[in-house]
Image: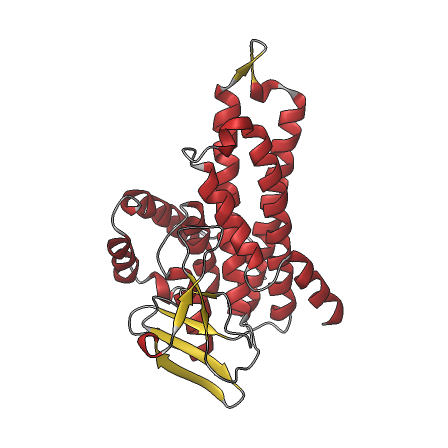
Length: 284
Protein backbone atom coordinates (compact mmCIF):
# COMPACT_ATOMS: atom_id res chain seq x y z
CA UNK A 1 0.00 0.00 0.00
CA UNK A 2 1.54 3.31 -1.13
CA UNK A 3 1.64 6.02 1.55
CA UNK A 4 3.27 8.82 -0.44
CA UNK A 5 1.00 11.22 -2.29
CA UNK A 6 1.63 11.22 -6.03
CA UNK A 7 1.96 14.37 -8.12
CA UNK A 8 -1.73 14.43 -9.06
CA UNK A 9 -2.78 14.18 -5.43
CA UNK A 10 -0.41 16.95 -4.41
CA UNK A 11 -1.78 19.07 -7.25
CA UNK A 12 -5.33 18.37 -6.08
CA UNK A 13 -4.44 19.47 -2.55
CA UNK A 14 -2.93 22.73 -3.81
CA UNK A 15 -5.91 23.36 -6.09
CA UNK A 16 -8.42 22.75 -3.30
CA UNK A 17 -6.46 25.01 -0.96
CA UNK A 18 -6.36 27.83 -3.48
CA UNK A 19 -10.01 27.43 -4.45
CA UNK A 20 -11.25 27.42 -0.87
CA UNK A 21 -9.18 30.52 -0.09
CA UNK A 22 -10.83 32.31 -3.02
CA UNK A 23 -14.44 31.40 -2.25
CA UNK A 24 -14.43 31.38 1.57
CA UNK A 25 -15.69 34.97 1.71
CA UNK A 26 -18.59 34.23 -0.66
CA UNK A 27 -22.11 33.28 0.48
CA UNK A 28 -22.46 29.70 1.65
CA UNK A 29 -24.68 28.63 -1.25
CA UNK A 30 -22.14 29.95 -3.74
CA UNK A 31 -19.36 28.01 -2.04
CA UNK A 32 -21.47 24.85 -2.20
CA UNK A 33 -22.21 25.40 -5.87
CA UNK A 34 -18.49 25.80 -6.61
CA UNK A 35 -17.70 22.46 -4.95
CA UNK A 36 -20.47 20.75 -6.95
CA UNK A 37 -19.25 22.24 -10.24
CA UNK A 38 -15.71 21.03 -9.56
CA UNK A 39 -16.93 17.48 -8.94
CA UNK A 40 -15.32 17.15 -5.52
CA UNK A 41 -18.16 14.94 -4.26
CA UNK A 42 -17.11 12.26 -6.74
CA UNK A 43 -13.52 12.05 -5.47
CA UNK A 44 -12.16 8.62 -4.43
CA UNK A 45 -11.59 8.07 -0.68
CA UNK A 46 -7.99 9.30 -0.38
CA UNK A 47 -8.58 12.33 -2.58
CA UNK A 48 -11.78 13.01 -0.62
CA UNK A 49 -9.77 12.95 2.61
CA UNK A 50 -7.40 15.56 1.13
CA UNK A 51 -10.36 17.76 0.18
CA UNK A 52 -11.97 17.41 3.60
CA UNK A 53 -8.72 18.32 5.34
CA UNK A 54 -8.59 21.59 3.41
CA UNK A 55 -12.27 22.28 4.10
CA UNK A 56 -11.62 21.61 7.79
CA UNK A 57 -8.70 24.04 7.65
CA UNK A 58 -11.12 26.73 6.42
CA UNK A 59 -13.98 25.81 8.82
CA UNK A 60 -16.18 25.19 5.77
CA UNK A 61 -19.88 25.93 6.46
CA UNK A 62 -21.37 23.93 3.56
CA UNK A 63 -23.04 20.47 3.74
CA UNK A 64 -20.10 18.85 1.92
CA UNK A 65 -18.96 16.61 4.80
CA UNK A 66 -22.39 15.07 5.44
CA UNK A 67 -23.17 14.69 1.75
CA UNK A 68 -19.87 13.02 0.83
CA UNK A 69 -19.28 10.83 3.88
CA UNK A 70 -22.68 10.25 5.51
CA UNK A 71 -25.21 10.03 2.66
CA UNK A 72 -23.13 8.65 -0.23
CA UNK A 73 -21.56 5.63 1.55
CA UNK A 74 -24.97 4.49 2.75
CA UNK A 75 -26.82 4.87 -0.56
CA UNK A 76 -24.04 4.36 -3.10
CA UNK A 77 -25.03 7.49 -5.00
CA UNK A 78 -24.92 11.26 -4.78
CA UNK A 79 -28.04 13.02 -3.50
CA UNK A 80 -30.25 15.37 -5.46
CA UNK A 81 -28.83 18.48 -3.84
CA UNK A 82 -27.34 17.94 -0.39
CA UNK A 83 -27.71 14.88 1.77
CA UNK A 84 -27.07 13.27 5.12
CA UNK A 85 -27.82 9.98 6.85
CA UNK A 86 -28.97 8.44 10.12
CA UNK A 87 -27.07 5.25 10.88
CA UNK A 88 -26.31 5.15 14.61
CA UNK A 89 -29.76 3.98 15.67
CA UNK A 90 -30.65 7.14 17.59
CA UNK A 91 -31.46 9.94 15.15
CA UNK A 92 -29.69 12.35 17.47
CA UNK A 93 -26.95 14.82 16.51
CA UNK A 94 -27.32 14.18 12.79
CA UNK A 95 -25.06 16.38 10.70
CA UNK A 96 -26.98 18.73 8.37
CA UNK A 97 -30.31 17.00 9.01
CA UNK A 98 -32.12 20.35 9.24
CA UNK A 99 -31.12 21.47 5.73
CA UNK A 100 -30.46 18.31 3.69
CA UNK A 101 -32.49 17.77 0.52
CA UNK A 102 -32.34 13.99 1.00
CA UNK A 103 -31.83 11.91 4.14
CA UNK A 104 -30.84 8.25 4.12
CA UNK A 105 -32.25 6.21 7.00
CA UNK A 106 -30.64 2.93 7.99
CA UNK A 107 -33.48 0.73 9.28
CA UNK A 108 -33.65 -2.98 10.19
CA UNK A 109 -35.12 -3.55 6.71
CA UNK A 110 -32.38 -1.70 4.83
CA UNK A 111 -31.70 1.82 3.62
CA UNK A 112 -34.58 4.18 2.93
CA UNK A 113 -34.11 7.60 1.35
CA UNK A 114 -36.64 10.33 2.16
CA UNK A 115 -36.90 14.00 1.34
CA UNK A 116 -35.49 16.22 4.05
CA UNK A 117 -38.67 18.27 4.05
CA UNK A 118 -40.69 15.16 4.97
CA UNK A 119 -38.85 14.64 8.26
CA UNK A 120 -39.20 16.83 11.31
CA UNK A 121 -35.66 17.86 12.17
CA UNK A 122 -34.93 20.04 15.18
CA UNK A 123 -31.64 21.89 14.96
CA UNK A 124 -29.69 21.78 18.21
CA UNK A 125 -26.93 24.16 19.30
CA UNK A 126 -23.41 22.77 19.24
CA UNK A 127 -20.01 24.28 19.95
CA UNK A 128 -19.39 25.16 16.31
CA UNK A 129 -21.94 27.77 15.15
CA UNK A 130 -21.12 27.11 11.49
CA UNK A 131 -22.14 23.44 11.67
CA UNK A 132 -25.75 22.33 11.31
CA UNK A 133 -26.65 19.48 13.66
CA UNK A 134 -30.18 18.28 14.37
CA UNK A 135 -32.29 15.60 16.06
CA UNK A 136 -34.67 13.48 13.96
CA UNK A 137 -37.66 11.36 14.97
CA UNK A 138 -37.74 8.65 12.31
CA UNK A 139 -39.14 5.48 13.87
CA UNK A 140 -37.13 2.27 14.20
CA UNK A 141 -33.52 2.70 13.10
CA UNK A 142 -30.54 0.42 12.61
CA UNK A 143 -26.87 0.74 13.48
CA UNK A 144 -24.08 0.62 10.91
CA UNK A 145 -21.76 3.60 10.85
CA UNK A 146 -19.89 3.82 7.50
CA UNK A 147 -16.11 3.73 7.73
CA UNK A 148 -15.98 6.76 5.44
CA UNK A 149 -18.06 8.80 7.90
CA UNK A 150 -15.46 8.25 10.64
CA UNK A 151 -12.60 8.96 8.24
CA UNK A 152 -14.26 12.15 7.02
CA UNK A 153 -14.62 13.50 10.53
CA UNK A 154 -10.99 12.60 11.24
CA UNK A 155 -9.78 14.40 8.10
CA UNK A 156 -11.83 17.49 8.97
CA UNK A 157 -10.42 17.54 12.50
CA UNK A 158 -6.87 17.25 11.14
CA UNK A 159 -7.49 20.25 8.91
CA UNK A 160 -8.86 22.29 11.81
CA UNK A 161 -5.87 21.36 13.97
CA UNK A 162 -3.49 22.37 11.19
CA UNK A 163 -5.12 25.79 11.10
CA UNK A 164 -4.81 26.15 14.87
CA UNK A 165 -1.10 25.33 14.69
CA UNK A 166 -0.54 27.82 11.85
CA UNK A 167 -2.31 30.56 13.83
CA UNK A 168 -0.26 29.74 16.91
CA UNK A 169 3.04 29.83 15.01
CA UNK A 170 2.20 33.19 13.47
CA UNK A 171 1.28 34.54 16.92
CA UNK A 172 4.35 33.34 18.84
CA UNK A 173 6.68 34.66 16.15
CA UNK A 174 5.12 38.11 16.40
CA UNK A 175 4.35 38.37 20.12
CA UNK A 176 7.24 39.77 22.22
CA UNK A 177 7.76 39.01 25.91
CA UNK A 178 10.75 40.09 28.00
CA UNK A 179 12.29 41.62 24.90
CA UNK A 180 12.20 38.36 22.90
CA UNK A 181 9.71 36.73 20.51
CA UNK A 182 7.48 34.34 22.41
CA UNK A 183 8.40 31.57 20.00
CA UNK A 184 12.06 31.72 21.04
CA UNK A 185 11.33 30.20 24.45
CA UNK A 186 12.04 26.49 24.72
CA UNK A 187 8.76 25.59 26.42
CA UNK A 188 6.81 27.22 23.60
CA UNK A 189 8.85 25.33 21.00
CA UNK A 190 8.15 22.04 22.78
CA UNK A 191 4.40 22.63 22.79
CA UNK A 192 4.40 23.59 19.12
CA UNK A 193 6.43 20.47 18.30
CA UNK A 194 3.99 18.28 20.24
CA UNK A 195 1.11 19.80 18.26
CA UNK A 196 2.87 19.11 14.97
CA UNK A 197 3.63 15.48 15.86
CA UNK A 198 0.03 14.85 16.93
CA UNK A 199 -1.32 16.33 13.70
CA UNK A 200 1.04 14.30 11.50
CA UNK A 201 0.18 11.10 13.37
CA UNK A 202 -3.57 11.70 12.95
CA UNK A 203 -3.08 12.65 9.30
CA UNK A 204 -1.10 9.46 8.56
CA UNK A 205 -3.80 7.28 10.13
CA UNK A 206 -6.52 9.18 8.26
CA UNK A 207 -4.74 8.58 4.96
CA UNK A 208 -4.28 4.92 5.86
CA UNK A 209 -7.98 4.61 6.63
CA UNK A 210 -8.91 6.24 3.31
CA UNK A 211 -6.57 3.86 1.45
CA UNK A 212 -8.09 0.77 3.09
CA UNK A 213 -11.55 2.00 2.09
CA UNK A 214 -10.40 2.63 -1.48
CA UNK A 215 -8.97 -0.91 -1.72
CA UNK A 216 -11.78 -2.53 0.30
CA UNK A 217 -9.10 -3.85 2.62
CA UNK A 218 -10.44 -6.08 5.45
CA UNK A 219 -8.69 -3.77 7.91
CA UNK A 220 -10.83 -0.80 6.88
CA UNK A 221 -13.11 -0.77 9.94
CA UNK A 222 -10.21 -0.98 12.39
CA UNK A 223 -8.37 1.68 10.40
CA UNK A 224 -11.38 4.00 10.58
CA UNK A 225 -11.58 3.56 14.37
CA UNK A 226 -7.84 4.26 14.60
CA UNK A 227 -8.13 7.42 12.50
CA UNK A 228 -11.08 8.75 14.50
CA UNK A 229 -9.35 8.01 17.81
CA UNK A 230 -6.08 9.62 16.71
CA UNK A 231 -7.89 12.72 15.43
CA UNK A 232 -9.76 13.05 18.73
CA UNK A 233 -6.58 12.73 20.77
CA UNK A 234 -4.88 15.20 18.43
CA UNK A 235 -7.58 17.84 18.84
CA UNK A 236 -7.44 17.61 22.63
CA UNK A 237 -3.71 18.28 22.70
CA UNK A 238 -3.89 20.97 20.00
CA UNK A 239 -6.87 22.60 21.71
CA UNK A 240 -5.06 22.76 25.04
CA UNK A 241 -1.71 23.99 23.73
CA UNK A 242 -3.23 26.28 21.11
CA UNK A 243 -5.39 28.10 23.62
CA UNK A 244 -2.58 28.36 26.14
CA UNK A 245 0.00 29.72 23.69
CA UNK A 246 -2.43 32.38 22.49
CA UNK A 247 -2.96 33.53 26.06
CA UNK A 248 -5.79 35.97 26.73
CA UNK A 249 -6.18 36.72 23.01
CA UNK A 250 -7.32 33.14 22.44
CA UNK A 251 -10.38 33.69 24.65
CA UNK A 252 -11.72 36.66 22.68
CA UNK A 253 -14.66 36.37 20.28
CA UNK A 254 -12.80 38.57 17.80
CA UNK A 255 -10.01 36.03 17.38
CA UNK A 256 -10.33 33.54 14.52
CA UNK A 257 -8.93 30.78 16.73
CA UNK A 258 -12.31 30.02 18.30
CA UNK A 259 -13.86 28.72 15.07
CA UNK A 260 -11.16 26.15 14.48
CA UNK A 261 -11.04 25.04 18.12
CA UNK A 262 -14.79 24.43 18.00
CA UNK A 263 -14.69 22.64 14.64
CA UNK A 264 -11.98 20.28 15.86
CA UNK A 265 -13.83 19.52 19.09
CA UNK A 266 -17.18 18.87 17.43
CA UNK A 267 -15.49 16.47 14.99
CA UNK A 268 -14.23 14.54 18.02
CA UNK A 269 -17.66 14.43 19.66
CA UNK A 270 -19.71 13.38 16.61
CA UNK A 271 -20.05 9.58 16.17
CA UNK A 272 -18.07 8.82 19.30
CA UNK A 273 -15.06 10.32 21.03
CA UNK A 274 -11.49 9.04 20.95
CA UNK A 275 -12.11 6.83 24.00
CA UNK A 276 -15.18 5.26 22.34
CA UNK A 277 -13.14 4.25 19.33
CA UNK A 278 -10.27 2.97 21.47
CA UNK A 279 -12.78 0.68 23.16
CA UNK A 280 -14.14 -0.40 19.77
CA UNK A 281 -10.63 -1.43 18.74
CA UNK A 282 -10.32 -3.63 21.82
CA UNK A 283 -13.43 -5.62 20.99
CA UNK A 284 -13.08 -5.76 17.20
